[in-house]
Image (tube, rainbow, N blue to C red; front, side, top):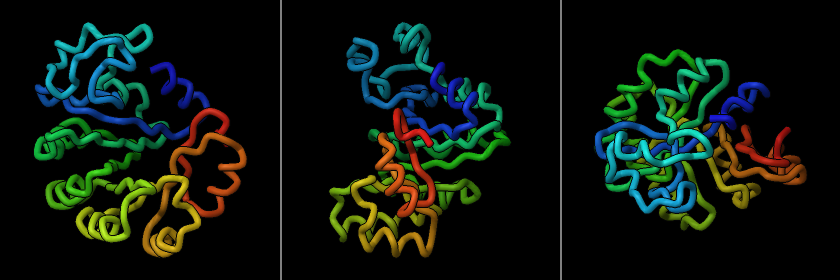
Length: 203
């Protein structure tokens, strides 16, 4: 939450990762369990929100998406990456429940193209993206784009300059992750439409 507060102070958009708890609450957390960030083996997807209350990220609990939305209040754009973990069918209703009343700009993206397809069917108004890693084969990449039917792509920085990225930009915006240095920003600023940055990648 302090990082999000700092982003608001800068007027910078916020990218964050989402996990679904066992009781269908959305929390802002990258990993599948609490080992790396909290020193606990608790599995996020197998625990209720109340069960996760014992974990701490810095001085506070794992934030819920609702708490982040309340803090941001539409002041900056949000880019929400869904981490699918055997719970694909539960995501669309969970996202709609939390986000349907939110008035600020946001997009929902995932490595899993099935999420894009389900959102296109169950919540077509939402802006949806497909996250594409560098190692994905051309065939799997084309299949993923067909299935997800995305409004934008978020591609690994190492993919910038590839012909398929240039072709994709003719059809939709292409974001690039993760920009960490000024030289990376200079390159990505030419080859992508929006940059997901941290540390010295700050503009």
